Amino acid sequence: MKILSVLTDPIYTTKAKFNVYEKFWLRFMNDKRDLPFLYLLSKIHIFILPVALLLFTPVLQGWSWWLTAVVYFYFSQFYFKGRFGLMFHCICHRKMFKPAWQQRIHAYISWVICPLFGHTPESYFSHHMGMHHVENNNEEDTSSTMHYQRDSFRSFLLYFFRFLFKGVPETFLYLYRRKRKKLYTRLTLGEWVYITLCAVLCFVNLKATLVVCVFPLLFARFVMMLGNWTQHSFIDNSDPENLYTNSINCINTSYNHTCWNDGYHIIHHLRPGIHYTEMPQEFLRKKDDFARQKAIVFDGIHYLHIFYYLMTKQYQKLADNLVNINNMFESREQAIRLMKSRTKRIPVKPA
Image (tube, rainbow, N blue to C red; front, side):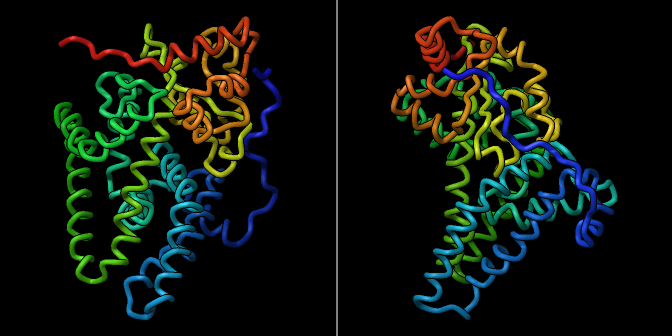
């Protein structure tokens, strides 16, 4: 196990001078700390969007099309995907632009840029903001991990395929029953427009439709469920609503530098609107609460490591990277017993 060390995750450092490009966009933005998001969007518009459009044209033929498609898929789905997805996550929680521009720009990102990374228009916002953060992975959250054995690959596959085939209908029903008309209408419209567009594009260029639209959708939903599974793998079955003990934190990992401190998932559920650059300090402020609750915090590893260690039941590896805040665990064995107890399936409550 590890002691709580100095945090190396990104925080905001004051910038003395802004360049012309930054000054232009700052006129429309709410928070100068979001300039890295602007740069990411700019790169996507330079390197991803034009190539996606190019793949549908007859300009590329034969081997040149396949080479471009492979390079495009690699950079869009393996380099930019995580960065964009977690940036979009941040700007769903905190409005990036001033009121006069926010709705139009957010709609543009949702309807034009999100599909390039496998997010159908409006689905992420409706699910994440309309349900997940309302229910916090509990009984009514249709993507909850509670009722699965969370160190079992078979259980994960059941979880993933349920979400793949039933995730959108279940989210719709959740929102409909709670009379969240705006959200379920947007969700329905986004799904059907996307399905119709994909069907039409198949007649234009089937190969390009698969590479640009279909495969990214399947990959995105797999990655999102893998992330949610890992973030909510350790749940105290005696108190599943406790935000300290139904999620985890990952600190001092390169993942936090590329994906906007997404490893601080307990902090995120405690304070969904906090800016990502404030999360490390917020964690330090709450470290005594983390220790009191025996919250799970890993140092130096991220969600992919944790998922692999869970699926292979390598609790010793997890213990190697577990942070023993304020000596909250008396021994390594005690920590492993606690982690194992928190991955156990929580039975469905009787009706």
